[in-house]
Image (cartoon, rainbow, N blue to C red):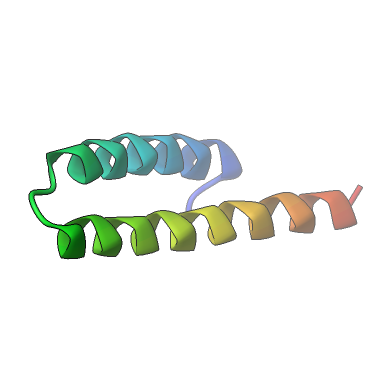
Length: 56
């Protein structure tokens, strides 16, 4: 992974893409899959935040 600035930008882009995919989904199953991806991204972002807090 690149620097935290690059990963933040990447994560923001991922959030936008997932949001668009969620709203474009035609079935509940598609929305569920996108929601699971959103949760994984959210966990990853929280882990980064907690890791940064531990090093302060």
